[in-house]
Length: 156
Image: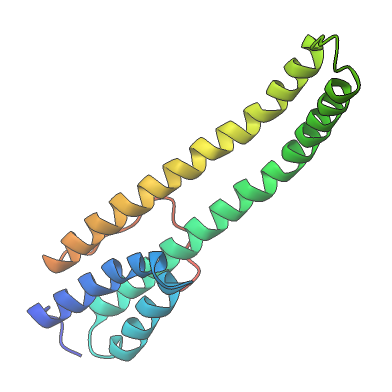
């Protein structure tokens, strides 16, 4: 295998990174398209092989982090939903004299704080995904191997 990196290999590596944006058009496109390009070209160049592994590991890591945050929010959403249902029932039975129980509103808002924090973390993951993918594509097109942050190496 040749150790020099030619323009074709740099372009393939950049396409692998940028093809992860296909998730916005094709379900699981961020795994399927880069994997197809990586598998079909990994034997030709170690540079393409490393970039393919890095891109897929990062996408898998982002998926796992998002799933973890989503699952972490479920209990808070359920408890907040129960508080909201109790508040709605109270308001329905007391139609002429509306007396909002401040404690129920407080409990409802406190229960949503972890959900809001998780939402901000998911938004931060989205921003990191977009920025790191663009940066990896640019670096790969210049022949530089980019190591994604917060990546768990599943594919070695």
